[in-house]
Length: 182
Image 1 (tube, rainbow, N blue to C red):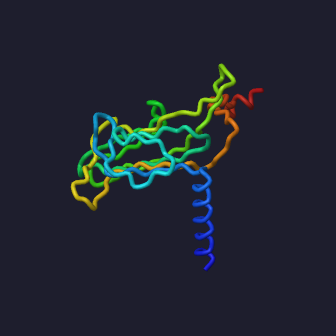
Image 2: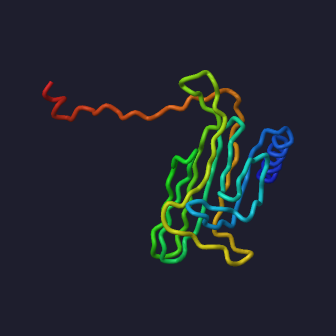
Image 3: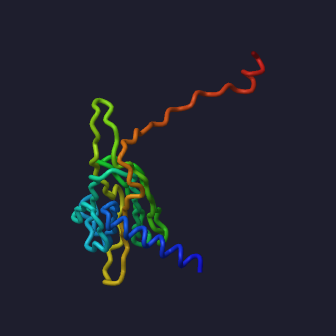
């Protein structure tokens, strides 16, 4: 009983966010390899999403934190490597080795607005696209078979700029012998 009530509230919350123009989301499926990019034949969901199905790209033009996921199945006995890219730069790379049916599945979180360090302007736009860097995936020969899927949605709707930080290597800690010699 608790689950169905919670599910109904979550559904109501999502629908009200969509009605107020706050939600962004998409799901494309049934991909075909076009060079290094994946064109998608099926657009099953698009809520205020700017999409280019020919190359499987999503363009962000609204502020917020976005979640993306990608899945593909390579042919049996084949390897596959796919990178999820932001503005042509790989953010995460997914890999399936040969030797059976294993899928390539991965996800990432990206911020929709960032502060430009050289100016006080916001840069709201980026493009996210899955790109095949090695191998191939199984084509969906049958109408009811989906072997590739690219999904994304806005997780938060924040209007304030978010500064991105980079990880710096930690200073090497002293070894036990160095500490004992002090």
